[in-house]
Length: 145
Image (cartoon, rainbow, N blue to C red; front, side, top):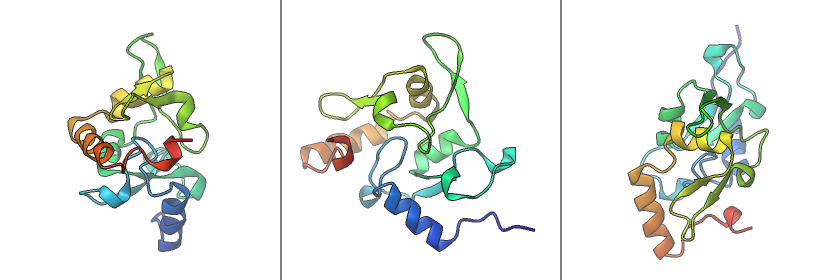
């Protein structure tokens, strides 16, 4: 029987690969008030494995809202769209930040579905982004490129 838990080496590699940011909402681990999680992009409950290419760094809020979802309804088109997959897609192709990067802007059906399903613009994270922006700590460097 295989061990499906994320080991210390995997977690270290995942945090480094994600530059210490939630791979969905881009919250920074160094300012988190709750522990970050390593989550399965394609859930174990659907038969997927604990391999680096199926794992993402996630803040607790995104992880809780995502749970075992892989898709949702796009509110504009009414169609089912896949949630953003950080191993297969580029964040900047599906999302952008507003002028002060406090809100995640939805660019595609995948972006819209992910913002709504994971609630990427929930009040607490928007307020934190606002404070960090005023302090010069947000957005993370990777979003400035």
